[in-house]
Image 1 (cartoon, helix red, strand yellow):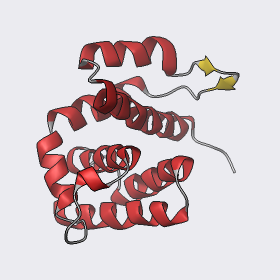
Image 2 (tube, rainbow, N blue to C red; image 1 turned 180 degrees about the vertical axis):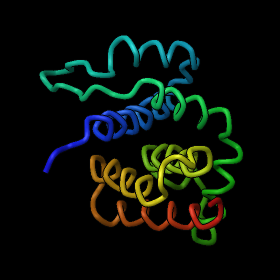
Image 3 (cartoon, rainbow, N blue to C red; image 1 turned 60 degrees about the horizontal axis):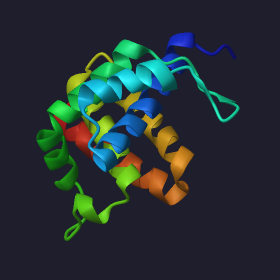
Length: 149
């Protein structure tokens, strides 16, 4: 099976976007500085002897800039799909960023199939969480996709 380099670059961009959104959330890093830091030091870099895949920079930028610009809209779509009594504040901070990036991509990137978006963010969830949380990502993003596409 051959791996599509663009697909790998987009997967890397999605993971990096979640990390950038997390950093922005935790440290309030200004957007321009955040993007510059990721462009210069993270995307495709070697960190602690681990080589990060080359990411599609324009796609990464769109995910980060778009998710931040449309955060109120994105968060509302997520919250509407959480169980009664649940808020974003109750969710793990990394989980929130995965859902934000995935929701933004479903909203704003009709060029990417909803199955691809959901599958990719389930994969991102697996990098941080167990199967239960990955299924949660699948369920929330599937519900968002049904609402926005």
